[in-house]
Length: 553
Image (spheres, rainbow, N blue to C red):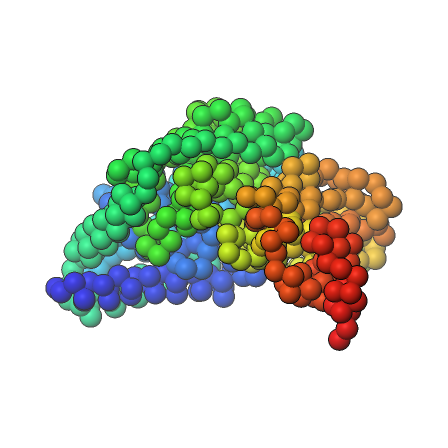
């Protein structure tokens, strides 16, 4: 087969897994999947090496899933696999880092021969236990654990497993519906793969796998070989749970790989913000790949030259039974830490620090009178991303996760919730030659006749995003009740009936000296409401006449 035909097949595989992901979005029950896109999908060869990933999805899932299928092969055994099988787990150390992610893997067959695997992951709203939050003291408190096992054996669903899962979750219909959606997502992939192999007359994926992996490895190594052979270290302090956490990293660029070591990072936290190594690896690889080889498709070979290590027992290499429910709050800040080191080696390449962690929160609603209903409502939101060397940061955009902000209408439809306010937060983007992205304001309450517990999952409260190369820090996270009572950035707080939670999400750091910002851009920001007049005058030096002109329609 010609190289052109193989390239077409490679593109076809990427299209297949993207169709997988879109099928999951269309059929999922949880708002985290169908509205926020907190999912991933991929195709693997018969040895469990990832060949292609969907464009839709988050790197915390896809890059972590690059290692997942090997665990399924070991635990299930290839010799026992059959058409119609579907396997499942939410093991944080063999999946994607916490119990709320369900990973489903299905063996792919063509003409009766086992040729590979399809895998997908989605974040579900509830898996029992304490609920989604940082308050657990061990994995055993954080929800039901599903070891790697069969969900379906030769097409026959394990009804006992379904019953067990239903009675261990607060949202059984959503959980079971999402698992069936994941299985259907893999089935779509199987159908499209069979059609492709038949069209090209291939018996299996062996030939195209070699083409994909060899070309991806070579292209990635070429990018690395062009870099300076340097070593650099960086440190970032973040909020943690009850005490600050230090994230430390050292990058060492070699001729054929980049070593990324997190030695010096803080140890385990007693609460659920610890990160399994698979998730640390996912986001460290993503940061490096975005900066060095962004146009090379993700697969096992393009990820392999990024070698990630961390001391066992550190907060970024947690071992069982450490609580890990909010592993993303630490994990999403790993790219900013990596970029602190990479900026020393490749100046004018990486952005300033951004909000990093998704601004998630979950409401556990209870009726206070007859006629109300219980509900678990999870909503994904974002702060601002860091300014870039030549561009402003993006407002209310989730980097590095790529997860979408949920629409107000979808959140309010999921339970008796009212979003009273959701708008951009002026002055939250760090000042600079290029401004950091803005965060958001939100005001959240429950419908009449309900109270709720508010599970906060925030960072950047005490350690806002730092600017780069003279840029200023972004705005810090703020969390309080409408009576002014301050709430913690992580953990569960009771909110009485009639009260609101007032949220200010963080902005990204600025890039470069604010005095060098184009005055026309400052005037534009003032007109758009991104800046207050005070900041325009005091930070950017706008004159009274320029401020007055900006007020004109």
